[in-house]
Image (cartoon, rainbow, N blue to C red; front, side):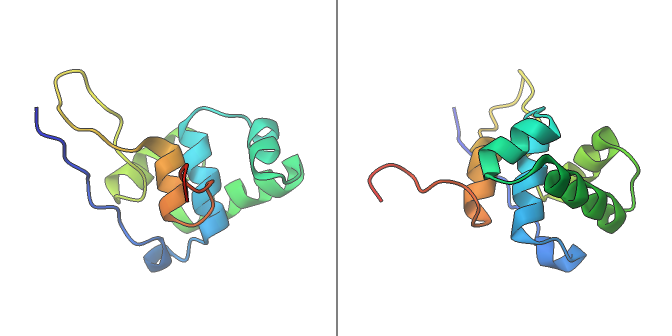
Length: 107
């Protein structure tokens, strides 16, 4: 089995902030705005505003389309398929890469 990490796109190309990337990563986990706010120690209203900004920057109108476009642009890891040997760190790893996740253990 070969482990490959997909190359993530540059959020700055689309004007996406590191906080918006953290929200995007957690959206891809299926979390609600309230749950995302709890994880990021932010208010639900702030998360909703970040989502609205993401939708504008990605030129989409809903969560599913935003996630699909973000995957297509390489901003977040693609959804794993059973037949693939693709291993990605997942949304939490994506958030860490963009500066908003917790530090890995031992660091």
